[in-house]
Image (tube, rainbow, N blue to C red; front, side, top):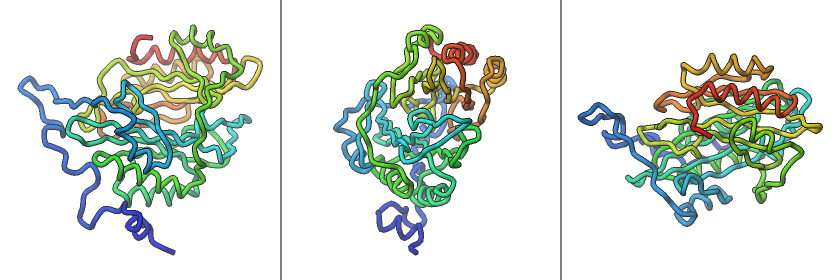
Length: 320
């Protein structure tokens, strides 16, 4: 059997001996130097077009979508090959089981890459070796669901440098899983009172793969490597509602918080009967450092939305 490094070399993904990871070589001022007023200098993402990302789409083997006025290019990889059951609910891929890779380009020409790969427990060691061998960083490995079968893990990946090289590494890792080929987006509405959910949460959701989803940005600048992160890169709160009939829904997602907000969010969730799954970070160098609380419940959708509104209101999020 070929070693992981030999396979990576054959695919042109392994770093040469003695080379640093993709994050090496950042200019000194972008690594946290301060100006005369004591403020960290920040680099903002630049607008791009679909054509700019054509080589990345080719490397990933599927197209992505431009977000945030062209400042983020994001590609999803739903695990439609898996039948995952948690607390009696068959979980739709769009609720909890989609890998993604997001890309932002900055004015120095370098690209920040962040992603979250959904893998089975058997796939995790191989994916870890491929990711590490290709020079990507892993910044978190954790769960998004309570008890579930088969056992899954979510691993966050990170790179700063060459977009195509990082895309090839993500593709190589996912090719060693059962992740299927892409299908066209499905925005068909499901059996939920979306208008009532919008009113309760004070903002509008969208249908995606049978899930009604809210993505809520924080009301502050968030950076990684002192590069400003647009919301599409992932530093957001995500609330997903999967219809289960009769006005009910299974809810899953994560709430982005500063350390001082964590306990209020936990109390709000538990006060409405929503289960706490995991509390962890997704990034290693973000400023401010954010934590993410994953949750799960299955009950009346509008009642759950009211509890989630209380939890979101305990954080510093952008106005609806």
